[in-house]
Length: 262
Image (cartoon, rainbow, N blue to C red; front, side, top):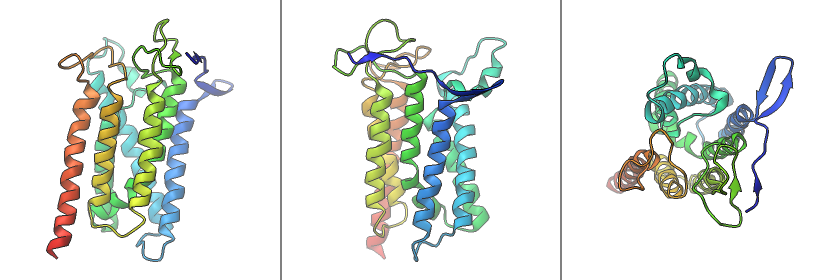
């Protein structure tokens, strides 16, 4: 066992204002997406300029926050106790659904593409490689909050989390930060560094995120209010990730099939 998790989720207190690490990780994620987008936009054949990149990050931030929170309430916590409706706004405590955020981002991309008269997958393919590092930062925020921990384990790096009882557990949020963040970023950044058919990069994002999330769910404790959905191992995260894998495969096949038919 490594250690007892003892990290203050509040990074800084200024009078009545509390700045949480969770919020800082989100800001870092948006900043990283902006910086990577600016770097890509400077390529002579990118078809993007700096104003468009900044606007895209703004659209995505709104889609992610609103969609992520709505998704969490819909998929993982649909029945709040009476009088607890204000919890919807308490995003600093965590409780963001990636799959809900994905829906919000899909809508945001559509609105952005419509505004700038770009093709939908021109925007989605540009955005996909910019996203994983932000996801990784978000999972680090989950780790600092001591939430979404894994199953009880005796691996040498297991940790005791304050809300997880006395037993040591998998730090599953760090596994997700590594796979959904760093590894997915490397895959997409390298893959998209060469010209690819429309939809292919978006398909790669859906495929590999779905695979990584599905795999980590095997060592992640299911949400208490939901438990396992079937067979004592199927979780909500897996149920929501499987369509991503299927959609990713379909997009990649369609992308290359269209290229071959031209």
